[in-house]
Amino acid sequence: MEKFFAAVQNMFKIPELRKRILFTLGLLAIYRLGAHVTAPGINKAQLELVWGQVSGTLLGVLDLFSGGNFRTISVFALGVTPYITASIIMQLMTVLYPPIKKIQEEGEVGRQKINQYTRYLTVILCTVQTFFVATWLSKNNIIGSEWWATILIVVTLTTGTVFVMWLGEQITERGVGNGISLLIFAGIVIGLPSGLMQIKEKISAGDPMTTLGVIFLGVVIVALIALIVYVESARRNIAISYASRRVGNQTFKGQETSLPLKINMGGVIPVIFASSVLAMPQTFFSAFPPAQQGTEGYDPNSTWTQIYNFFQLFHGGDPYYEFVFISLIVLFTFFYITIVFNTDEVADNLRKHGGFVPGIRPGAPTAEYLNTILTRLTTVGAIYLAFVAFAPQLVLTGFKVARLPFIGTGLDNFFTSTPGLSWIPTGLGYQFFFGGTSLLILVGVAMDTVSQIEAQLVMRNYEGFLGAGSRLRGRRS
Image 1: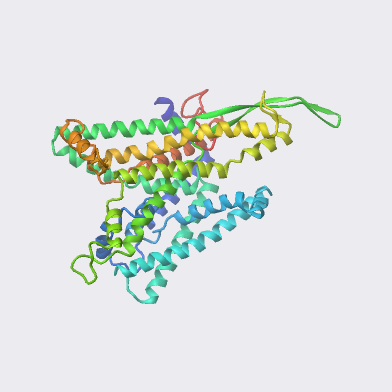
Image 2: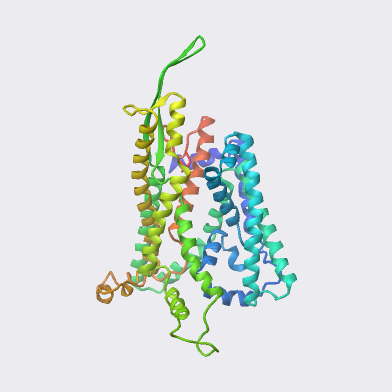
């Protein structure tokens, strides 16, 4: 700990690093200040009433990545969600659309062009999303039904998102760390005090079982953080050799290097995809619910009503939900990594530059070898992501074993009547959102930021956070 505090002191001894840190903190403060500026024309009482019915839908996912801004419909209600979506689309387009790929290969100029296209796409996506948000607000009487009320919300939220995108880019260029990631990080961290207050209130009740539950929750979170740090730092190094080559009258000796492959190359993207897909049915049904009991057209036996009732139970803790959730995480992990890491292209680049894997022939055999390793790493990474996403849900909301066919009732009776296991069907009862997605973002962004700061310290002959001879690696290192 002494070395850690010494490194913190050294951070502010370097004028350039001190300026970058203070600049980053200042823009993050501006971002949080905007969270308290509500969009014009919002009926706050009606919004709070409606939000209690839709928090588990896609709107809840939007609220997570907006740092709670969507719940209050502030000027930053959509946060960086449209920018993240646009970035993912452009990343996929560099693989699927050859003209975009050629632009990417132009170096720094190409990168700037793609960033510009990403900004334009962000504005387009944001305009479309804010229109649907405004329509949803109007149908639920949160804003007026006049056309100008809808346009006002669209313009306000789109402008707010563009400003947040600009804040993120300024932090990346003139601050410390990845700006967009830090904005998401700040939005999640700001919700932790309310969660801690819930825990304090439960402990204050004096129930020994509640205290044990809090201790168990703390142990689970610490263990998950340790697992995330370990896996996100892990690398599979593939030995690469470069043959000696002669250029003119000069001879360049062969070199030995390595190609590091991460276990979790997909990051948090597969979990975000899976959460968004599963939230779509609830979002759809919240917009188009069937006729309710006591209203005209109500039919409890209609197919639409039965489907609606099924999806009312289709949320975290439901066995069917968890099975589909884990399956989608695995599926999206393989899909995303296949898109972003082309083994044929890597093998071809190695061959062009005279590189080869010892014992493996260049070209197709190298691509097949890399693909085998990548498949194994992706399998482990997918299981890791599924576990990290599922474990917090199990602790917080439980696992509704009674919904399982055939054995559900027996398991539910067993867990309920067994001391120490009675929490499994119901969870520990905490309402704050601190799921696997949040943990992955918090730990990953913290590792990246600390890694960049440590690199600045080491470059100026200061010891890093772990002391001399140690190096903290972020997700991108």
